Image (tube, rainbow, N blue to C red; front, side, top):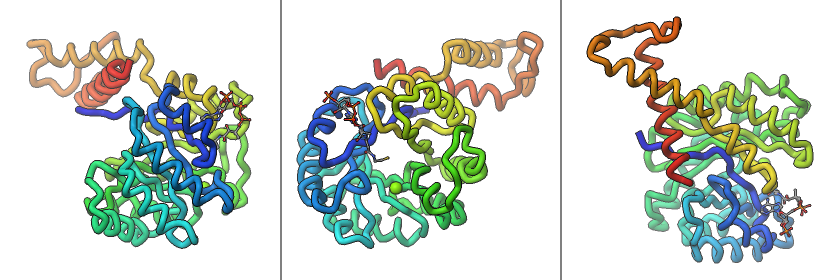
Length: 292
Ligand code: COA
Ligand code: MG
């Protein structure tokens, strides 16, 4: 079971040279070099060239490198896609995905441009229509040409478009967030939670990380370096859980339990499905440990 940890993925404006410089050192599992909303119209062309250059230069170690392009319905999208394709990052992040055709169009274009299959496509889920179409969007992953691998939740845009409040606990969004997790799981996608804007409020941030873990998300997008370490900690299986998982795997491997579907460990019912969950927990912990 090969798992790629995606606990923390840091956005940085493609127009911010100082931030881009740090992309190779920060302990995030991934970085999103942004050409979209964090870059003003007058800086778009310059940011595109800079981001392409930074990605081509490489040196990111284990960090996943993602370029967020502008939508293909904007004046910059087509050229962003070409520049990103030539730079061949780990993934290209498409904003405001809400229809399957958007993914099909990008997939076809990447093939035309001869981009290696290792370059995946990640989709921002950030509009009301995306939430209503989430099953169809996730199902696009069955078509390998789309390269779809990860959902990134855009909670700021969702709040804007729906007029739902962005409040601690996120009650107005719970249904939307959990639908995204369900759809992602059906088609084997990862899901990354939205950002916490008040980056000086660490308690609020930690509470939202914990909530993302409870939802079953794979990680969270972050906006500031100070959010990386707490985010990594929140989305790493706790040592006690890893130990319990190893215990479950070992128990099912004992000769006296061969062929059994359910056993008792420390007074708790443990079924084969728990052994499967335990193997995933251990694989994730091992992948994180290998990262150092
Ligand atoms: N990526 C990399 N480095 C970052 C960073 C980021 N997202 N945000 C801040 N830093 C660096 C700064 O360059 C600074 O480094 P330095 O002291 O070596 O110069 C250090 O971290 C401290 O920055 P700070 O002064 O606390 O933040 P700021 O006021 O300069 O910036 C934001 C605050 C929110 C504007 C900035 O964090 C940011 O641009 N975040 C990403 C926004 C984004 O991409 N949004 C789009 C998707 S939601
Ligand atoms: Mg957005």
